[in-house]
Length: 303
Image (cartoon, rainbow, N blue to C red; front, side, top):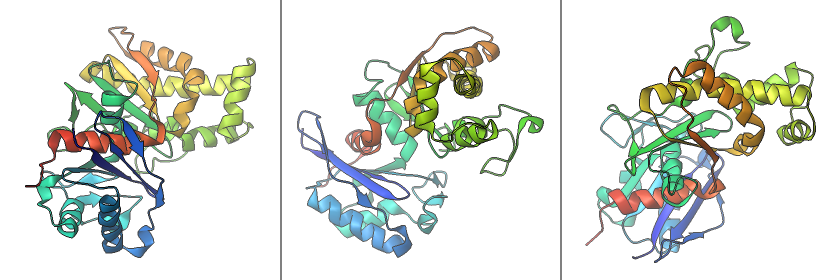
Protein backbone atom coordinates (compact mmCIF):
# COMPACT_ATOMS: atom_id res chain seq x y z
CA UNK A 1 0.00 0.00 0.00
CA UNK A 2 1.35 3.45 -0.91
CA UNK A 3 1.67 5.90 2.01
CA UNK A 4 -1.42 8.07 2.44
CA UNK A 5 -1.33 11.58 3.90
CA UNK A 6 -3.94 12.93 6.29
CA UNK A 7 -4.36 16.50 7.56
CA UNK A 8 -6.40 17.65 10.57
CA UNK A 9 -7.15 21.38 10.69
CA UNK A 10 -7.76 22.84 14.14
CA UNK A 11 -8.57 26.31 15.35
CA UNK A 12 -4.98 26.98 16.41
CA UNK A 13 -2.89 24.12 15.01
CA UNK A 14 -2.80 21.79 12.02
CA UNK A 15 -1.69 18.20 12.52
CA UNK A 16 -0.65 15.91 9.71
CA UNK A 17 1.14 12.68 8.96
CA UNK A 18 1.28 9.61 6.79
CA UNK A 19 0.06 6.06 7.07
CA UNK A 20 3.01 3.98 5.92
CA UNK A 21 2.99 0.91 3.65
CA UNK A 22 1.86 -1.33 6.51
CA UNK A 23 -0.63 1.23 7.79
CA UNK A 24 1.72 2.46 10.51
CA UNK A 25 1.19 6.10 11.63
CA UNK A 26 4.06 8.47 10.82
CA UNK A 27 3.18 11.82 12.44
CA UNK A 28 4.69 15.15 11.44
CA UNK A 29 5.25 18.11 13.77
CA UNK A 30 2.17 20.30 14.13
CA UNK A 31 2.04 23.72 12.50
CA UNK A 32 0.02 26.85 13.38
CA UNK A 33 -3.27 27.33 11.58
CA UNK A 34 -2.83 31.13 11.20
CA UNK A 35 -6.40 31.48 10.02
CA UNK A 36 -6.10 35.25 10.52
CA UNK A 37 -4.14 35.27 7.25
CA UNK A 38 -7.25 34.15 5.36
CA UNK A 39 -8.60 31.10 3.56
CA UNK A 40 -6.40 31.46 0.46
CA UNK A 41 -3.22 31.50 2.54
CA UNK A 42 -4.35 28.44 4.48
CA UNK A 43 -5.11 26.54 1.28
CA UNK A 44 -1.68 27.46 -0.09
CA UNK A 45 0.02 26.11 3.01
CA UNK A 46 -2.08 22.93 3.08
CA UNK A 47 -1.08 22.14 -0.49
CA UNK A 48 2.57 22.94 0.20
CA UNK A 49 2.63 20.72 3.27
CA UNK A 50 0.93 17.87 1.43
CA UNK A 51 3.71 18.05 -1.18
CA UNK A 52 6.38 18.08 1.54
CA UNK A 53 4.88 14.92 3.01
CA UNK A 54 5.02 13.27 -0.41
CA UNK A 55 1.27 13.17 -0.88
CA UNK A 56 0.07 11.36 -3.94
CA UNK A 57 -3.67 11.23 -4.38
CA UNK A 58 -5.74 10.44 -2.47
CA UNK A 59 -5.35 12.95 0.37
CA UNK A 60 -7.58 13.17 3.45
CA UNK A 61 -8.55 16.35 5.33
CA UNK A 62 -10.51 16.87 8.54
CA UNK A 63 -11.91 20.31 9.33
CA UNK A 64 -14.22 21.60 12.08
CA UNK A 65 -17.55 22.79 10.77
CA UNK A 66 -20.77 21.92 8.99
CA UNK A 67 -20.97 21.28 5.25
CA UNK A 68 -23.84 22.34 3.04
CA UNK A 69 -26.00 19.27 2.29
CA UNK A 70 -24.66 17.35 -0.68
CA UNK A 71 -21.55 19.54 -1.02
CA UNK A 72 -18.08 19.96 0.46
CA UNK A 73 -18.60 23.68 1.08
CA UNK A 74 -18.39 24.78 4.71
CA UNK A 75 -21.43 26.77 5.75
CA UNK A 76 -20.50 27.10 9.40
CA UNK A 77 -17.16 26.82 11.19
CA UNK A 78 -17.18 28.76 14.48
CA UNK A 79 -13.46 28.21 15.12
CA UNK A 80 -12.44 28.95 11.50
CA UNK A 81 -14.95 31.52 10.25
CA UNK A 82 -12.66 32.55 7.37
CA UNK A 83 -13.40 29.15 5.79
CA UNK A 84 -17.17 29.62 5.73
CA UNK A 85 -18.33 29.51 2.13
CA UNK A 86 -15.08 27.86 1.05
CA UNK A 87 -14.98 24.58 -0.90
CA UNK A 88 -11.73 23.51 0.75
CA UNK A 89 -11.51 20.29 -1.25
CA UNK A 90 -11.69 22.15 -4.56
CA UNK A 91 -9.26 24.87 -3.48
CA UNK A 92 -6.57 22.45 -2.28
CA UNK A 93 -7.07 20.14 -5.27
CA UNK A 94 -6.55 23.03 -7.70
CA UNK A 95 -3.29 23.95 -6.00
CA UNK A 96 -2.10 20.36 -6.27
CA UNK A 97 -3.24 19.98 -9.86
CA UNK A 98 -5.63 17.16 -8.94
CA UNK A 99 -9.30 16.48 -9.54
CA UNK A 100 -11.37 17.37 -6.45
CA UNK A 101 -12.42 13.74 -6.10
CA UNK A 102 -8.82 12.91 -5.19
CA UNK A 103 -9.33 14.63 -1.83
CA UNK A 104 -11.58 13.15 0.85
CA UNK A 105 -12.77 15.75 3.37
CA UNK A 106 -15.07 15.57 6.38
CA UNK A 107 -15.85 17.05 9.76
CA UNK A 108 -12.96 16.72 12.22
CA UNK A 109 -14.96 14.73 14.79
CA UNK A 110 -16.10 12.29 12.09
CA UNK A 111 -12.55 11.58 10.94
CA UNK A 112 -11.32 11.25 14.53
CA UNK A 113 -14.00 8.61 15.10
CA UNK A 114 -12.91 6.79 11.96
CA UNK A 115 -9.29 6.89 13.13
CA UNK A 116 -10.20 5.35 16.48
CA UNK A 117 -12.38 2.75 14.73
CA UNK A 118 -9.65 1.68 12.32
CA UNK A 119 -6.44 2.02 14.35
CA UNK A 120 -7.37 3.03 17.89
CA UNK A 121 -9.59 2.08 20.82
CA UNK A 122 -12.37 0.82 18.57
CA UNK A 123 -10.19 -1.34 16.33
CA UNK A 124 -12.04 -4.52 17.31
CA UNK A 125 -15.32 -2.91 18.32
CA UNK A 126 -17.32 -2.90 15.09
CA UNK A 127 -19.88 -0.11 15.42
CA UNK A 128 -19.00 2.75 17.75
CA UNK A 129 -19.92 6.25 18.82
CA UNK A 130 -17.06 8.58 19.69
CA UNK A 131 -17.62 11.53 22.00
CA UNK A 132 -14.96 14.20 22.41
CA UNK A 133 -14.90 16.32 25.55
CA UNK A 134 -13.09 19.60 24.98
CA UNK A 135 -14.11 23.22 24.63
CA UNK A 136 -17.40 21.72 23.49
CA UNK A 137 -18.74 18.19 23.13
CA UNK A 138 -18.26 16.66 19.70
CA UNK A 139 -19.31 13.36 18.24
CA UNK A 140 -18.65 10.97 15.41
CA UNK A 141 -20.34 7.64 14.65
CA UNK A 142 -18.87 4.73 12.69
CA UNK A 143 -21.24 1.95 11.63
CA UNK A 144 -20.25 -0.93 9.42
CA UNK A 145 -16.75 0.53 9.22
CA UNK A 146 -18.00 3.75 7.63
CA UNK A 147 -18.74 7.24 8.94
CA UNK A 148 -22.41 7.82 9.65
CA UNK A 149 -23.31 11.35 8.52
CA UNK A 150 -27.09 11.27 8.49
CA UNK A 151 -29.41 12.04 5.61
CA UNK A 152 -28.51 15.74 5.54
CA UNK A 153 -24.83 15.21 6.32
CA UNK A 154 -24.95 16.78 9.78
CA UNK A 155 -25.46 13.84 12.14
CA UNK A 156 -23.68 12.93 15.39
CA UNK A 157 -23.94 16.39 16.98
CA UNK A 158 -24.16 14.83 20.42
CA UNK A 159 -23.15 18.06 22.17
CA UNK A 160 -26.57 19.45 21.39
CA UNK A 161 -28.65 16.64 22.80
CA UNK A 162 -31.11 17.98 25.36
CA UNK A 163 -30.33 16.89 28.93
CA UNK A 164 -31.91 19.46 31.31
CA UNK A 165 -34.72 21.96 31.50
CA UNK A 166 -33.79 25.62 31.43
CA UNK A 167 -34.28 25.86 35.21
CA UNK A 168 -31.15 23.71 35.65
CA UNK A 169 -29.05 25.90 33.34
CA UNK A 170 -26.92 28.84 34.45
CA UNK A 171 -26.26 30.01 30.90
CA UNK A 172 -27.18 29.04 27.32
CA UNK A 173 -25.14 26.71 25.16
CA UNK A 174 -22.83 28.25 22.60
CA UNK A 175 -25.49 27.39 20.00
CA UNK A 176 -27.82 29.82 21.76
CA UNK A 177 -30.19 27.16 23.11
CA UNK A 178 -30.67 25.96 26.67
CA UNK A 179 -30.09 22.54 28.18
CA UNK A 180 -27.57 21.07 25.71
CA UNK A 181 -25.19 18.33 26.85
CA UNK A 182 -22.27 20.61 25.94
CA UNK A 183 -23.39 23.05 28.65
CA UNK A 184 -22.96 20.36 31.31
CA UNK A 185 -20.21 17.92 30.29
CA UNK A 186 -17.60 19.76 28.20
CA UNK A 187 -14.26 20.80 29.69
CA UNK A 188 -15.52 24.37 29.64
CA UNK A 189 -18.65 23.38 31.56
CA UNK A 190 -16.63 21.33 34.05
CA UNK A 191 -14.43 24.32 34.82
CA UNK A 192 -17.48 26.54 35.29
CA UNK A 193 -19.19 24.01 37.54
CA UNK A 194 -16.01 23.62 39.61
CA UNK A 195 -15.78 27.36 40.19
CA UNK A 196 -19.43 27.52 41.22
CA UNK A 197 -18.76 24.73 43.74
CA UNK A 198 -15.78 26.59 45.20
CA UNK A 199 -13.29 24.08 43.74
CA UNK A 200 -10.27 24.51 41.52
CA UNK A 201 -10.97 24.89 37.81
CA UNK A 202 -7.66 23.18 37.00
CA UNK A 203 -9.20 19.97 35.70
CA UNK A 204 -6.03 17.92 36.18
CA UNK A 205 -5.89 18.96 39.84
CA UNK A 206 -9.63 18.40 40.23
CA UNK A 207 -9.35 14.86 38.87
CA UNK A 208 -6.31 14.15 41.07
CA UNK A 209 -8.32 15.18 44.13
CA UNK A 210 -11.23 13.00 43.03
CA UNK A 211 -8.95 9.98 42.63
CA UNK A 212 -7.29 10.54 45.99
CA UNK A 213 -10.31 10.44 48.29
CA UNK A 214 -14.08 10.88 48.51
CA UNK A 215 -15.20 14.48 48.72
CA UNK A 216 -16.54 17.44 46.76
CA UNK A 217 -14.22 16.95 43.77
CA UNK A 218 -15.28 13.33 43.32
CA UNK A 219 -18.94 14.24 43.79
CA UNK A 220 -18.73 16.94 41.12
CA UNK A 221 -17.10 14.64 38.57
CA UNK A 222 -19.70 11.96 39.24
CA UNK A 223 -22.43 14.58 38.67
CA UNK A 224 -20.81 15.66 35.39
CA UNK A 225 -20.57 12.00 34.39
CA UNK A 226 -24.27 11.53 35.13
CA UNK A 227 -25.14 14.33 32.73
CA UNK A 228 -22.89 12.79 30.09
CA UNK A 229 -24.56 9.43 30.68
CA UNK A 230 -27.99 11.00 30.19
CA UNK A 231 -26.84 12.16 26.78
CA UNK A 232 -25.26 8.82 25.87
CA UNK A 233 -28.49 7.05 26.82
CA UNK A 234 -30.28 8.98 24.07
CA UNK A 235 -27.72 7.72 21.56
CA UNK A 236 -28.25 4.18 22.86
CA UNK A 237 -32.02 4.40 22.51
CA UNK A 238 -31.77 5.64 18.92
CA UNK A 239 -28.75 3.82 17.49
CA UNK A 240 -27.71 1.09 19.97
CA UNK A 241 -23.91 1.35 19.54
CA UNK A 242 -22.11 -1.39 21.50
CA UNK A 243 -19.10 0.84 22.18
CA UNK A 244 -18.54 4.45 23.20
CA UNK A 245 -15.05 5.88 22.75
CA UNK A 246 -14.40 8.96 24.92
CA UNK A 247 -11.73 11.38 23.70
CA UNK A 248 -10.76 15.04 23.83
CA UNK A 249 -8.67 16.73 26.50
CA UNK A 250 -11.26 16.21 29.24
CA UNK A 251 -11.60 12.60 28.11
CA UNK A 252 -8.52 11.91 30.25
CA UNK A 253 -10.90 12.18 33.21
CA UNK A 254 -12.90 9.15 32.06
CA UNK A 255 -12.02 7.04 35.11
CA UNK A 256 -13.48 9.73 37.41
CA UNK A 257 -16.54 10.27 35.20
CA UNK A 258 -17.36 6.61 34.58
CA UNK A 259 -19.40 5.85 37.72
CA UNK A 260 -21.62 8.84 36.91
CA UNK A 261 -21.83 7.90 33.24
CA UNK A 262 -23.08 4.43 34.16
CA UNK A 263 -25.64 5.93 36.55
CA UNK A 264 -26.85 8.45 33.95
CA UNK A 265 -27.30 5.73 31.34
CA UNK A 266 -29.17 3.53 33.81
CA UNK A 267 -31.51 6.43 34.65
CA UNK A 268 -32.50 7.10 31.05
CA UNK A 269 -32.08 3.83 29.13
CA UNK A 270 -35.26 1.76 29.44
CA UNK A 271 -33.46 -1.34 28.13
CA UNK A 272 -30.74 -1.16 30.81
CA UNK A 273 -27.93 -1.82 28.34
CA UNK A 274 -24.29 -1.93 29.37
CA UNK A 275 -22.26 -0.66 26.41
CA UNK A 276 -18.50 -0.74 26.48
CA UNK A 277 -17.11 2.69 27.40
CA UNK A 278 -13.42 3.11 26.65
CA UNK A 279 -10.86 5.89 26.44
CA UNK A 280 -9.59 6.98 23.04
CA UNK A 281 -6.01 5.86 22.41
CA UNK A 282 -4.80 7.92 19.44
CA UNK A 283 -4.86 11.27 21.24
CA UNK A 284 -4.10 14.31 19.10
CA UNK A 285 -3.25 12.06 16.14
CA UNK A 286 -6.78 10.67 15.78
CA UNK A 287 -7.87 13.38 13.34
CA UNK A 288 -5.13 13.12 10.76
CA UNK A 289 -5.06 9.32 11.04
CA UNK A 290 -8.80 9.22 10.44
CA UNK A 291 -8.46 11.64 7.53
CA UNK A 292 -5.89 9.35 5.93
CA UNK A 293 -8.20 6.36 6.50
CA UNK A 294 -11.01 8.30 4.86
CA UNK A 295 -8.79 8.99 1.86
CA UNK A 296 -8.06 5.27 1.56
CA UNK A 297 -11.79 4.52 1.60
CA UNK A 298 -13.28 7.37 -0.41
CA UNK A 299 -10.52 9.22 -2.24
CA UNK A 300 -9.89 8.68 -5.93
CA UNK A 301 -6.36 8.02 -7.09
CA UNK A 302 -4.88 10.39 -9.69
CA UNK A 303 -3.91 8.91 -13.01
